[in-house]
Amino acid sequence: MFFLLFRIRKSGVLCMKFNTELLHKNFNGDPHSGATVTPIYQSNAFGYESAENLEKVFSNKAAGFAYTRISNPTIEAFERRIASIEGGIGAVACASGMAAVSFAIMNVLESGDEVIASAGLFGGTIELFRDLSAFGIKVKYVSSVTAESVREAVSENTKAVFAELIANPKLDVVDVKAVAEVCHENGIPLIVDSTTATPYLIRPIQLGADIVIHSSSKYINGSSNAISGVIIDGGNFKWNAKKHPVFKDYTKYGKFAYYAKLRNGLWRNCGPCMSPFSAFLNSVGLETLGIRMERICDNALQLAELLESTDGITVTYPALKSNEYYDLCQKQLNGKGGGILSVRAGSKERAFKLINSLKYAVITSNIGDVRTLVIHPESTIYIHSTTEEMNNAGVYDDTIRISVGIEDIDDILADFKQAIEKL
Image (tube, rainbow, N blue to C red; front, top):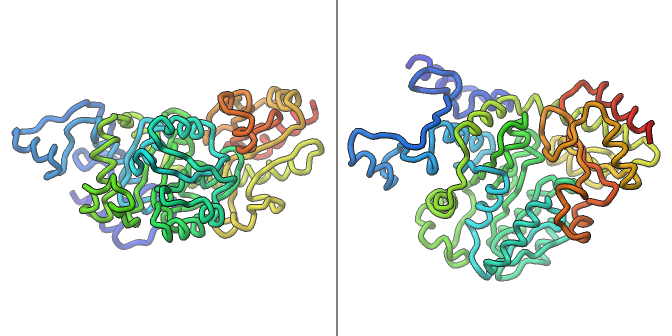
């Protein structure tokens, strides 16, 4: 008991910086055993002393856990921590990043509604949005999500704007504050996928975003050992049943309307819950997010500068001074550009040769690992996309996506230098 009170007293008095928040904000370990990390509660269901007590839990009249598809202590600990770090009022953990995108969007929409989104989205998200047409939901694409493009595209049927904060792999950057202002002028929420930015670079809710999504399989987890996603509700959007009829039974919850609808409706009923083990791995990974991202961003910039100075290679990276988003990076992302580089090698053959000549980089489809990862997007993660969809996403036959890791930068640079020499 003394330990818990001491921890609470500290968090109530001190103003924590980012890395300290990752370890201490809204987290006290396990109150029952004193364990410094929340244990893995690998249980389907939870018993109660009386039927009356369980009834209260199921009717949301008492706190507790009934069934892991709905809630679980290990999962709740992760949700609580990520919501605090992002500045949201609540989070809902999902089985994958795509599950998080799916339910974050569908929680707002019904047949006949429209969504505005960038044409340069991740290929899996484009395919998901294509599937939504079967349910009468239209996606209106713009070349990139800006205040101007949203203002021009919005209609009476527009019910949400969806954007990737740093697009993967196109790497255009959304001005969250400017876009959020236009969204709110029109009574629509801004839903942001912040996977590639992470809360280390930006906390979108502070700039006006309403819902934040992470594929936590990536930088949150950090070690490529768990598939997972999470949805964070900022709690600031004023849900109106006239504009969004699907909220007619939930506006009574005020700022918790979106969270309550998601938790008690489609998400619960479809069952895309995160596993307790994945939640545990994500919580452990979250604790080192800051120091990993600092190293990753520094490495990525130095690698981008090397590639930019190489003949026959073009590189896209938001933190390069030559990049069109450089000023926005300085203003919105603390001068950082994230961990992804998009490189054009001149031809598919040269791209494959460069990839195959690397000694340390792993050829794989993930991003956000501690290791440097590379992939040829056109022949892999965009293989089901049309040529137009690929080009909109900055994917061509000579494109290489690089997810930079935490290796010593001298080794990363040496590896790419020797691979380039073989071209």
